[in-house]
Image (cartoon, rainbow, N blue to C red; front, side, top):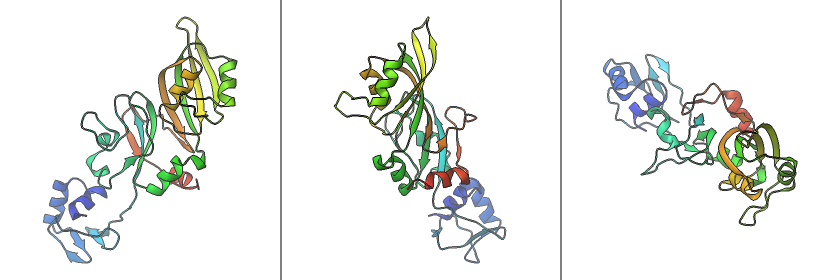
Length: 240
């Protein structure tokens, strides 16, 4: 990794700001004064100091994003804005990726990391990681729907979903819509939408609020993100 990229990633500003630090003789690599930000370093082995303070490098990054509609869950796309485009340049340096996907028109919790092992554990069907969604449904959700979800919805391709917990949280009689929460254990393509289609209803709005032990920080505005806390990271790593 280039030294200036390393400095940017670890919170020492942009490349321009790193250049000023280098110019001011504030940077050493393995106790040697360095003035060129283009030199390559090994973050795991080389010791970098800024003004005498050792810079600590973390190999993994973990971000919670409140995904807005209109953005796709991918690392790059020629036609659409991706969730990675929402990250600041310094937060893209370690090549993070979204864990799983939310549909383009779905909002809510999305974990972005470069920790492949953690991502695998969260997405593995064997782990049965719960995912909870809030939704607005066209039509009135009733006890028959709740029981059908509990019994295991059969999707249009014959896939039998695991038992899902569906809760009715409100009804708008004038609009003939329902607000619900549903917890599922898989992550099939368009799964929640297809589950409601199977009971002759349509999802009008969908938002993911939890993924395993991770809960959406409701103080995050749409399109904003933050680093996970150490407690949140440890909770996710406890899935094994």
